[in-house]
Every structure is written in structure tokens, then in C-alpha cells.
Length: 222
Image: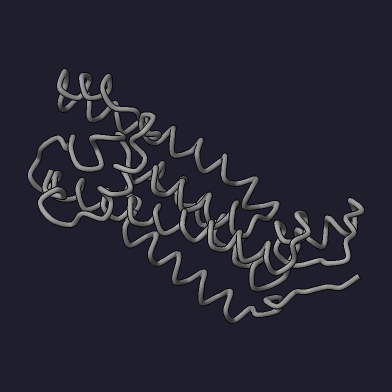
């Protein structure tokens, strides 16, 4: 059985990547209370588990080979590469698709942060730009980025298992936040809730959402 674990054992790289990704996450999503810290903790666990396997030890592949009888002429640290049986080609395809999703999600995450940060400084409700398509673009961007990197690019037992937990935790946070916004803006926000979905844009608006995430002019004033 030909084994290809090019990244395995690079714990120094794993540590550097974990620190950098974690810094970026906390830079744009600074938890303010225990609920937000709980959500951030789940994301932090996702980041550590993902990159520890990507660059450190491929635990998922080990467990599948050792206990579930996975056997192949080509076994790679990349789960998709092993399961699909396309070798380096499979790894390349999953990497390109995963990075495309990850960078799109990061763009939405950052632009959503810019919009809401400026709106809070002006004490007003933001309903245009990214917020014209989803009520919580920061969370939408976070979900897309984590899905792209931890499910499409480099799936592991932990990243695939933690992803729905991340979605559930941030759905709970979003509902808590909306109760506070409703108390502050009343009917204006309730009308906005009826018009705009929480996380997933309406059919045909994904492209517009992605385009809006790349706009850094007047749109982030709303």
C-alpha cells in the first residue's frame, strides 16, 4: 500500500498556522460575553483539530485504516484524496474548491464586520450592503470559510463533526442578539426580519452576496 503523508509531523507549521488563524478570528470576532466565548471556543477547537491533523498527525486516516478497514493502493493524509481514489489530483481539486469557499467566506466575514462596526458607532440599524441579503453576514461568512477549509479542503473526523456544532452555537447566538436588537429598534427590525433571511440568501442572491463582500466603498457605511 503506497502511503503519502507529505505534511505529517510538521508540528512547527501546525502551531504557526493555528496561531495565525486564531489571531485573525479573534481580531474580527472579539467575544464580549460568555455566550460569545462559548461560540469562539468551539471555533477554536475546530481550528486546532483541523490543522493539527493537516500538518501534524493524520488521525482520521489512521483510525479509518486501523479500525474501519479502509485500504487502498493510495493512502493520503487528505481524506478526499484517499476515498475518491484520485491521488494527487483529488487532493488538488479539494484544495482549490476548499480555498475558493474559504476566501469567499473570509471576505463576507470581514465586510460584514466593517458594516456592523461602523453602524454601531453611528447608533443605527444596518440593512443594506451584505445585510440586504442576510441578517448575519459575519456568521454566514464564518460558516462558508469553515466548511470550505474543514469539510471540502481537508475533512477530518473532528472538523466534520464540529462543523454542525459551530452552526448550532452561532444560530443560538444570533437569536439572542436579535432579541436585543428587537428591543432597541422595534418594528423596523421586525420588518427587516420578515424581508431578509438569517444566514442563507434567497435563491439567486449568492453571487450578489459574494460581490458585495468585495466592495469597500460607501456600502460599508450602511
